[in-house]
Image (cartoon, rainbow, N blue to C red):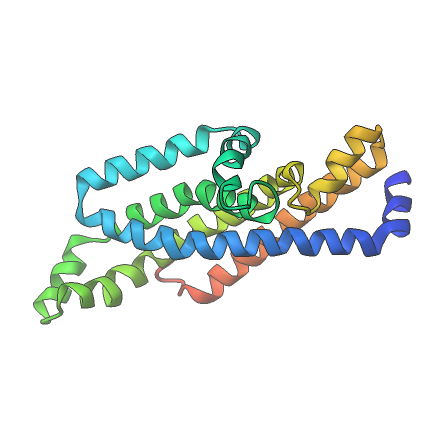
Length: 216
């Protein structure tokens, strides 16, 4: 009841924080897709590069988010962005790379070689095979990686409030500092509901975008 009353009393502020949260995650995921998918495609043609890229992306995933924010503050402070939205977005982009790159790489590498040979036999160039055969067949797995990255980013973005990025993590950290249980629970509940809603929505989009015959 206390959490419900907190929502009733602060719904406008909660909505504003939720919008900040969505804004940060959206920017980060768009950048992550724009970098991760091309990198994932590129490393399918270079085994050594694939090993290095996936290894580095895996190392980044092992760094605690608080520690990563702390590492970035002195570097980004040189450009005047030590705290706030910019380091939060950078961190989310870095964390999102592994699922997107790995899924893109695995999806394209696992396309049936016989299908690729059939495309080449029809006179397709390497780029045509990639964009007309491999990527459409890999789309389901690539999208699954994006889905994981988005849901993960929603959770990590809550920690970004620690460096002044705003978002729903503001309620969690303020609640801890003020020993305000209702505020903590409110922030946690909204983040959890947002993650569940986004995961469900992305699942529906995946089902609509990818034909039943191509879904893994």
